[in-house]
Image 1 (cartoon, helix red, strand yellow):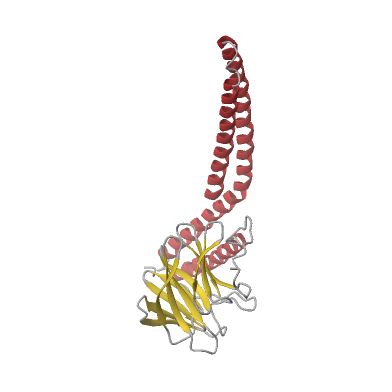
Image 2 (cartoon, rainbow, N blue to C red):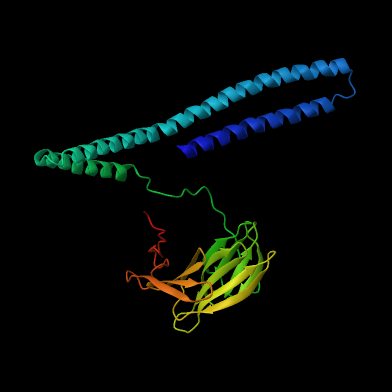
Length: 303
């Protein structure tokens, strides 16, 4: 509902302000095109034009804004219904909760209240499953960009991507052993050699970490790269004793996915702990064979 309201307000502002700008530009052109006429004639002509344009603008605002408001109401109606149902389920569960507390010394009534509570919980759970959104993202459009460098022999295989605060994009190209920096038009402006890069993450606004690994070899670890004025420069390299397929950074620590195991490292390369191990897939955390698998979940704790 908040998203719809903000979207409507932005649309209203865009349409009205756009029309006002067009009107002002048109009036300015009218005034400049009549400099050779008498002042009185110019004044009357411009004033008459202002009255007509004001009338058109008022009709436009009323019509367009009213139409958008009606559209907003129609979109919000089902959300309002779900909201009211959520409030009703919450209130009913709260009343049963209070009733159970009051009936603790009356076993028979307490048993009935608990049964009703279980039924209500089941109803609420069914309601939430039926009305929860089944998607998180909406694709508004897409564009295709070629990031292959003319001197490269192989087609690009993008295995990781991250966006810097200034809008530049970093991608790891596994087939060509490179990390590439793209400007806001997605053109390659700099690149840095990294052997078999697998994934990439941002550490600071000007530094990234790249996990690299070659199957059946001893080439694996984390390469740190700095970004300075649209130029990439290789920094420290952390040599690790396991596969490095996925990487993420959180509060000064690196989380490295090594097949079925998730490790936590300090930025100096010291292993802090083994966070998780699961055998649901031989490369848990990467997208293979069409199966999307979860790399890891960071829990800050709930108290």
